[in-house]
Image (cartoon, rainbow, N blue to C red):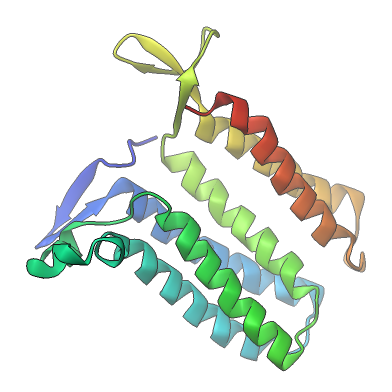
Length: 204
C-alpha cells in the first residue's frame, strides 16, 4: 500500500499514487459495470456505455483539475493545472458529476432501473482496487495493529473499508440470483450507508 501523496514523474507531469490508483479503479469500475449490465441482460447497453464513458471522463477531469476549479488564481501559471491534483471534496465532486450525468440520461432515455445495480456494483469493484492500493489513515488506534506513523498506531481505514466492501459485494450474490428486481439496489445503498456509519468513529 502507498501513501496517497507519494508522487513520481512522467516527463513534465507529476502523478500521485492516489491519482494512479484512482485511474485504475475507474477503468476497473467501467469494465465491471459493462460486465454487470451484460449479466443482467439490460436493454440499451451500447447507448448506456457511451454515456457512461463520458461520465467517467468528466469525473476524472474534475478530480484532476479540482485545485484550479476551486482556486482559479492558480492559473496565473498554467503549468499548475498539470502539477496539482485532487484536494478536499475532489473525489466527492467527481462522483456527483458522474452520477448526475448518468441519472439525467437515465431519466430522459428511460433506461431500466436495474442500471443502478450495475453502476453501484461496478463502483464497488473499482473501490476495491483503490482501497487496496492507497493508505487511508484514521484516528489513533488502541489495537496492536494499524499503520505506524512516527511511532503512533493509526486505524487502517482503507483496510476496514476494503473488507466491508468485499463482504457487501459477496452478500449480493449469496442472497439473490440474477432476477432479483430492485432488492439488490436497496441492499447496495443500505450497505454503503452502513459502511459509512461503521467507519465514521475511526476517522480523524
